[in-house]
Image (cartoon, rainbow, N blue to C red; front, side, top):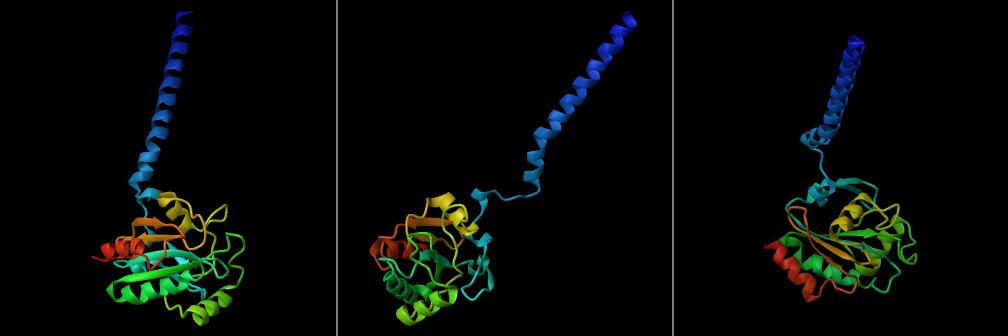
Length: 198
């Protein structure tokens, strides 16, 4: 009888030790993952992403390291479409100081960017003489949101309409999110750009 009790106690002790060990391994595994250097969303920067140009070429945004970026979701049939003119003016004024404007066509708002990449490129060049980089059409909200915009909106708020603007510092970190009504050539936007370029 005593022998059986001892055997049962020993078995329970083994189960307890194994369970505790498993629990310990499970609790330390996330630390091991962190030690492997995995980057969380909050640790990322814009420079960690790759995108496609409007001509279909893959581009790593770290190409723009050391530049100030103004990332804009653009559309051809929006009340704010004339902001292309302001964007181009701002780009022309500040590009030699290190500003790059990145235009991302998106059809998320009332179907105001229905065209193909080729049609969008032609429209921008012929109507507004756009010379800043344009990228392939993407989604800036919802289930199909592009990874770049998932990052931008997680850090600085959702895109409310066409021609929202994200100002990005030379280190790839978000400085400010401007709404559609904030004109590219307006004092609020250009003042922030000038500050970032210093």
